Image (cartoon, rainbow, N blue to C red; front, side, top):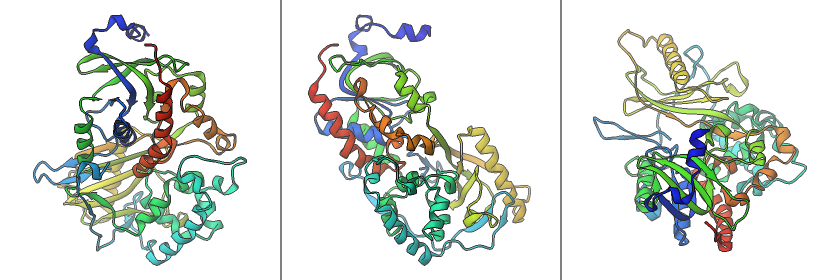
Length: 447
């Protein structure tokens, strides 16, 4: 508390070189924050981006092999002259494994023709809710199908062939069979359906961070990396400006801005330094989140790529926490792991090694020489923020979006739309940017 009081100093307590004045201060330099900064710049607005990591891009992570310089992605395009290519198709499919036993399963859930037919039927249902492609635009009372669990939905519409492939490809939503269709429609959206019929894109050098390095060059010096919020004061009138006190590698800075755009997941534990109102606190505490993680390991002894499955569960979808996949990539093993709740790095790593050991034992791969080595670990949690069906029914998202513009603050990011960068960029252009630009016209005059 003493530190908080100390850093709520007046303008006269800062040297001119430590005061930064901008039209908009953007908290968070992930996909939404970076794109918003670039687009505001396009409209002639001055910005400053505050990012706690040492780079922009958020969950867009790339590991570079120090021996070969080849890259593996752990996770604004044309303007940065970054060439894109299609990822090659995989000729040999993965084996299906029960990661609780390590045993290979005699199942083949990925009947492509049946899956394609199910996608067409799913698209018919998705198209009943075009407003969800743009935001959480709900009508009240909320339509019954939006609150069906994914499992009940696929049974109702005879889409059973959709279930397992959705579990594998739309990772991070856990337990997927229990999640309400509101969130499934948001994630398995029109863009995702289009993606099933085309090859995924990556950068020519297989380095997604290349995009954000270009964005950093464009925005520099208006990016504060390795920086954290200490305190802020957001006025209730637009005649005064937002003040944000930030700890940076170059010392304490005071940012004075007409408006603030907040992009971190709106969980109370992640909003340290925010001067949250009772209304904001009451809404944000309703959220709960999934855990989602990825890793790259060497020397696992695996000689095949593995997908999770469980022949005793509905649609072969296994219970998590646990791995989704263990995929061979350049002789290394890339692991994707999900959990219904957020776990610590140590918990996830321990479980991955345990599941890997079960596979090695069951497949006769454990000869005493394979000692897995961690090359990279990426924590994407908190992932997929949700609220209860009762909260949805009672108008949670209407109240949440009513926060936009209050106290000169706007919000962007996955919790406000979906875990999909391209969809979030469209959401920024269609919804956030017009709101911000209109608010900036009104101006704020007092410091």
